[in-house]
Image (cartoon, rainbow, N blue to C red; front, side, top):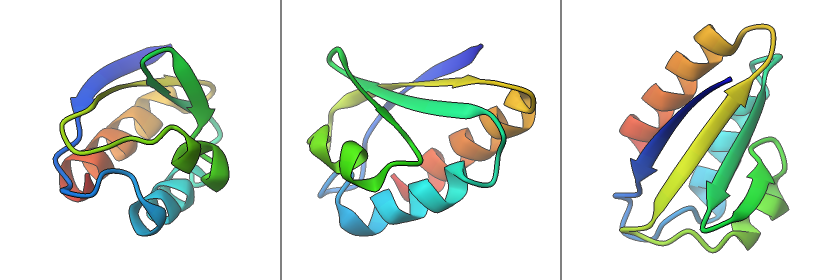
Length: 85
């Protein structure tokens, strides 16, 4: 399992549009991608679960990636967060 912490910079947090893009990105990989905010977890492939975390600008999330292609998924997801969130 690989993981990284990230402070959300998008001024409105993980709302509908970036959450939809994140779901699309996470579905590219075989690995399981889980977003953890203050003890609440959501799979990155589930839009409503992601939005229910209530991630706002300035919040820190922990991203956990595990599975067959976790190296590739780690790089792709981390790049996505840096470019979009």
